[in-house]
Image (cartoon, rainbow, N blue to C red; front, top):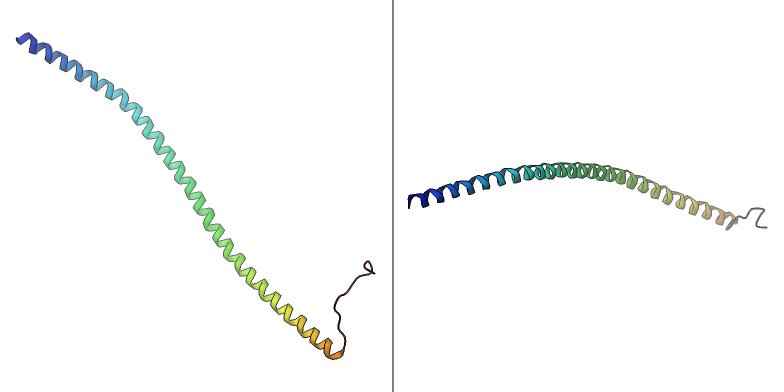
Length: 106
């Protein structure tokens, strides 16, 4: 009976050694996969940082362009007002120029 328990003990020890060897070989693969995943994560974070920086630059450019657009709209309104003033002055004098054509159109 003792030889049976001894055989079971040796079998369990063999199984334990096999499990540890399988774990150690699998663990090295896992470590490789973990390293690759971390590298991919760092690369993705770097790309996100680039995109965020580009977004911030775009937003800054948009604000500059919006200011320029407002200035141009104000200039357009001022020019329209001046045109209306000139038309009113010419209407008072009787000199209304509606369309001016060059020599090509005549």
